[in-house]
Length: 111
Length: 112
Image (tube, rainbow over all chains, first blue to last red; front, side, top):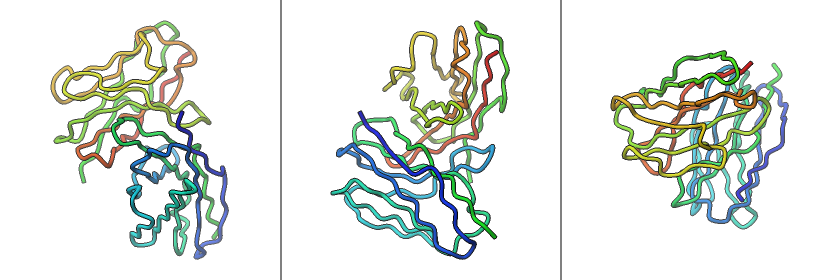
C-alpha cells in the first residue's frame, strides 16, 4: 500500500533556511501536500503541488518534487520561531478520496 | 476565512459507551472526511462521504463506526461501543475542489 516517510526531527537557527524531506511510494500520487500542526491545533494546509510540476514557490515556502525518486521537500526561507511545529507530508492518488500522511517532522527553531 | 469546526474539543468516555463527534463543514463544501491520529502515530484516513453516502473507507472503519449528515449542516462520526484503542485525536476534513482538504481542529477522545 501507500507509504509516506519523513525524518522525525529538524533543528535550525532563526533566520536560516529549513529543508524538510519526504519520500513516498505510490507512483500514482497526483497531489502532494504539506500540512503544519502547531501544538494542540489541527492540520493547517500550507501548500500543495501537482505531480506534473517539479517546483512551486509561495512566499517563504518552496516545494520541490522529484517524481522519478518519489521525493518531496519543503524549504522554509528565513525560518522564524513561529515556524516551530510539526510538518506533515501527504499524498493523494487521483481517483481516490483518502490522503495518506507521513509521520511528521518536528521543526524546532532556535532563537 | 471559513473554517471547519468540531465539537467537542475533548471527550472522555467509558469503554463500551457510544460517542458522537460533530463537525461543521465549510458551507459550500461537498465532500467530507474523518481521520484519526493515535498519539505518536500517523494521521490515518477513516472514511469519506459524498452525496449522503460513504464513498470510500479504510479497514479501520468497521461496523462500530458510522457517519451521517443528519441536518444538512453537521457531519457526525459515531462510535457505537468504544474500545480503549479508539483513544485518539479525530479530525474532520472537507473539500470543494479536487486538490485540497481542509481540516478542523480535532476532537481528542479518551476512552477509559
